[in-house]
Structures are given as C-alpha cells and as structure tokens.
Length: 557
Ligand SMILES: [Zn+2]
Image (tube, rainbow, N blue to C red; front, side):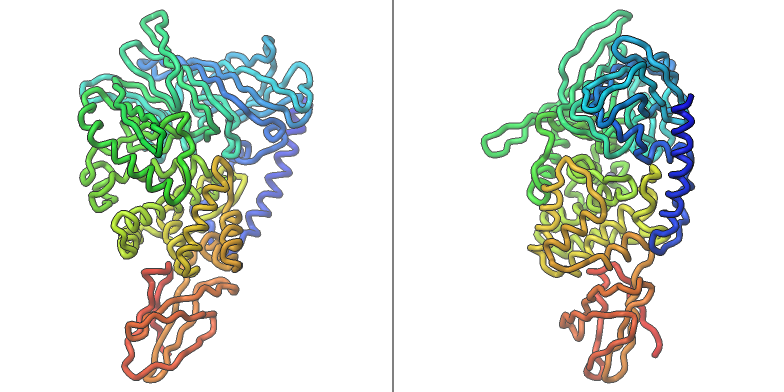
C-alpha cells in the first residue's frame, strides 16, 4: 500500500506540471483536443514504473470463444530492468479480468487503476536483470464501433455466413485485448503469438507461421512469430475461412516470399489484384529506403473493415475494386492503384519503421504517408502537376481548427484533426519553400533511412531539414504544426506596384512565396509589413497557392 500511495502522489504532481506545459505551447485554440483523463495520464506518460524496464519479448497465448465473443489467455512479458524494481506498471483494459500474475512460478500481488496494472514483486529485481512475468486474464474485449478509427474487435460474418473476425486498435491501444507496456516508444524485439480458434477456421497473425497444432474440443492453435521490433497496436489477429495466396518479390538475386490471406471465395481475384502491392513496395524502397521486414514477410489479409497498417500483415477491406471500393470511391487514385493498398503498405515505412516518439506527432505516420501518395503519382506519371492535382483533391478536408501537433505525454493520438491532409500539404509547401528537389528528396530519404526502426519527433524532422538546407525552418514548423492558422498572403496592386504581406502568421514567419508576374515566376520574401515591387500597368499577377498551403487574399489599399 505504501508504494501505491507514493505513485499516486507522484502522478498528481506530474499532472499539475503537465497542465502548465500544455498552457505554454505556442498559439492555437485547443478545441478538439480531449481533456487529460486519469487513464490517458497513466497510459500516456512514461512514469518511473514504466521507464524502469525495457520489454524485449511478448509471448501471447489467446483462446477465442467466438460465440461468447470472449478471450482467455496469458501473456509472458520478458524485459530488462533498467533500475532496481520492486513494482512496475503494465497495461490492460480495465474491463478484462486478471486471474493471476506470476513471476518465477509464484503468484505476485497486483493492483489496478483504470487500465494500469501495478505488479508488486515478492523480491527486488536488480538493475540490468533479464526477467519475465506472466499475466493470466480473460473477458470480453471491446468491440469496434467504427473500425479502424474506433477500434476493437470486429465480430463479423462472411458472404457465406461463416465467422470472420479481426481486431484493430490504433489509438485504443493493444491493451484492449492483451497486457503490455502500452506506450508508443516501447517496441519488443520479437513477439510470439499463439491463437487458438475453432478448427474450421484459420487464424492469421503478423510475421511467419511457425506451426499449426490441433487441440482438444475441435480447436486448433496457429503459432505466428514476428522477428522485429513492432508497435503494440500493429499486433493483430484475423480469424476466418482463409486461404493463402502466394507471390514472390524479386530484388536483384534475392526472392522474397509474400503470403496473402483472403477468404476462400476471393482466391482468384486476390491472385490478380494483390500483385499491385509489389509496385507500391518498389516505389517506397526507391524514395524512402528498404522494406524492413522481409524476414517476417509481407502479406495482405482480407478483413471485414477498411484496413490497417499491421506490420508485415497489412489488412485489406476495400473490396478488390480500384474505383468502386469502400475507399476508392471517395479517395480516387486515377485508377492506377488501390488506395488502401498504397496507404497501408506505405505505413510499413511511415509509422511501422519510423514511429512517432509520442502519438501527438503522428503526422509523421499519416501526413508523410498521404504526401508520399502524391509523390507516387508524380513518379508514376513522371509529372509534377499530377501530385498537385492529387493534393488539390484532398485539400477541402483541411479544417485548420487545431494544431497538427498537440500535447505530449497525454496519450493524445492526433488522428482526428489535420494530421493527414494538412500534414501532406505542409510537406508539399516545405518542398516549395526549399525550392531544391535533390535536397528535398535527400531529406526525406535520409530521415527515413537513418531513423528506420526508430522513434522520432517533429523536431527531429526539422533538424534533418536544417542539416540539409543549412536554413533554420523553425518558423515554418511553429506556424504549420503548432498553430492551426493558415498563412494568408494579402496583396493588392496599383498601376505600377504590387503590394504583399503575410497575415494570420506568427511574428517570426518568413516563408518565401512564389508569384507569377505576367507568367514569369518570381520569388518574394514577405513579412507582416507591406512590401512592393514595380510592375507594368495591367500586369497579371497570380499567387502560386497550388505550391504552398497559403490563402491568397486580395485586399483594398
Ligand atoms: Zn494511415
């Protein structure tokens, strides 16, 4: 009890401190950023009971009761102690029951608050010790209201009225179905998954299939293994009448194997439709570095929801239709690529390999991902204006209500605001501001290659930008990521002069801007005071707002 009391005191102090930090963040209304709840505090912050250990391995064992929509399992967590440990925090949704927690074959005590479980060991675990403990649990995990955005389990039926089940939990956290240290920076080095399901169904997880073992009661255990660091929310299970569709990816002298899983009646269409994923992988390797997970393979898995970037096990639910799929109809991609396949496969780079250090920086997953799609079309058609056309097609979804980056340490998954579309437009704008494509593409590739399998922040990205350009772009990141305000280029012209200035910007905002003066490109360097240049009478001047995320605003003198 004494230990528990200490934790609570510490947490309260930190909440107070955190609130101050939040108030000091630059500019912008916080409308839309959720209040810091006790649970988000416990999950979002790496307190001493979480930072004291580093997870190396999860061994996940789950038996599914599909009729009851319930799970029964145990997870062994292997970790290294970074301090002397008497107790530690592990995370499991509060609606799931813990039956026991064991360490060295003995039960240990634990207490629970919200989704945090405090494990109290019988003796101190010394610093730098490899240790493990096992959590036994069961219950009915959260169902998904609107997967993948509001995640959980989707308990569904296929066209032949057979069970078809999948989980998605980005944002909700993997703790909704198995115990883990549920912080985005904590990736194990490897994971074993043993999913036990009725024998008439197949269970598909991430990585490689190691074994299929028949059990009692007409059940079968599928054992999957991931041999790489992986985000907790990427670990997934899919259960259905699956068949494998094999393909190969040839690179130089190496042949990699792809094993997609689709419902048996979709085998033929998948054989013809899924090879487009190879073109996607080649594109990402060209611009953003090697695919990181070949030893775990690459597969698409058909699911009863839109899809998700589960590492080495990308889920797909767009209906095998390049124009009329669930997403294709609203997110057209010129009929050259399935939007779900490119978007979720691209996340193998943005998100799965290079992961945000805090979910508030998740534009690094989503904004860069959407931007990379614009580059895909630019590359595919060898035509820069196509990328602009694509970006213009998504521009109207930008809201400018809350900053792209919000508070840290609050389990704030900035997935609802302008993370996707504005994030992409901001990258396009930065390319235009830098105005040197070899440098721009080197920034992107080096950032991805140097941080492969790592964690990064918005600041890390701009450090790379500064390193390559030798220009400090903090004015740019402060404006576009930490305020919701879209810069306005105010302008007017007289018979002999064109006047321009920035409005709706931070004081330090000094982004250059390109104009077309009678069809000739001209770069200007506005600030918040009107500047002007000479023009001929009846000149036609256009603000190039298709290259920059700015609002061009004609004003009176
Ligand atoms: Zn995404």
